[in-house]
Length: 285
Image (cartoon, rainbow, N blue to C red; front, top):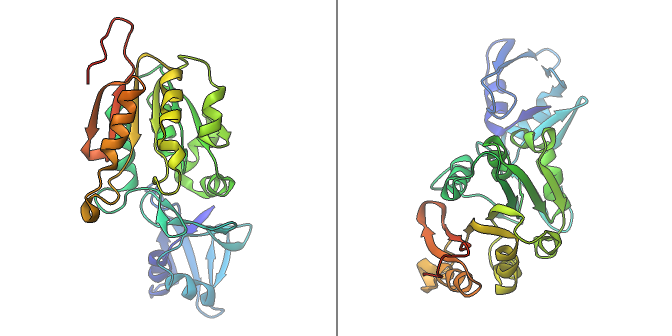
């Protein structure tokens, strides 16, 4: 597929030449495609099909969406179905649900955000990793690239469809990453005791998915981790700046209560890490 953003549309429309080379994969690669600008017929010819000047002008004014060309037609990378879901033209893209972005985009880009989470638990080759909340799959893909066997869970079919559109999510569907559609709260109960070396838990904010911050859910994470297994839990800090709340502290207290040790904050990833003790380890805080 060819992908378009407001920036690319403006670049094409502002060109004084009859042809221009532009990147059409959202900068996933450095490859540039030749675009023919037919000013007489007011049509721009892309590898995937032709687009009228009129449509391109509309895209140029829409800085909040990604568009793609498929089978000669132009589509917005967005779904309106029990809410509004869209790909946001960050690099790499993030997903936005009802106005709430699923990745950090202010301090770091979504890829660096992913690296901060993965690095906090030092995923290694040959390990088995559970990614509880897939989203666009960046965490699952990075763990897989490091040689881990990865299972990832996604609750929302709309999110899964946007991942299929996103070029940066392609590796999710080409390799051996196992995707399970369902609520992590229920799916986690189907795994065996001590099945995973690492769990990466990156849930939606507490107000949207409080059950994924519960002691009951943490008990299940503890159960499926091997002794010595590591957990990264994205928490964020909603409310801390203006209301003095510390959601991370509550999460850390509950993790310790179910048996985790060495529970500590990871400021660069806005989360916490925790370890399941080995049999001979004492439960130190």
